[in-house]
Image (cartoon, rainbow, N blue to C red; front, top):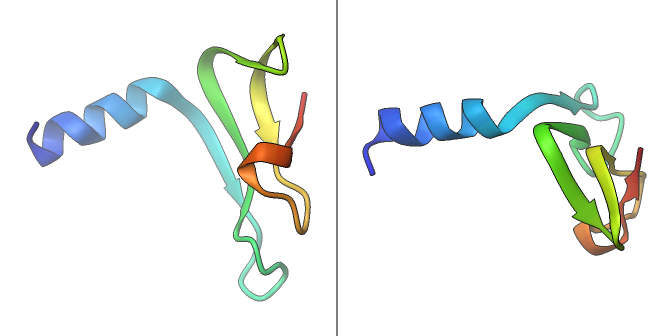
Amino acid sequence: MSDEEKKNLITYLIKEIQIYPSGESKMPLKSIEFNFPIYIDGKEVRKVLWERGNTVESCVYM
């Protein structure tokens, strides 16, 4: 897969990524919103929020 194809795939999958301003959090990723529903703990969600100290496995979702 070329770099351009990878970029197009990510653009297709992800609607929005929010990051914290520099130095505001140890975790730079604030939230990620997908262009399609994903399933977390059996629930359909499109947006995943990371709170301070959370890992991907313990994220908060909307």
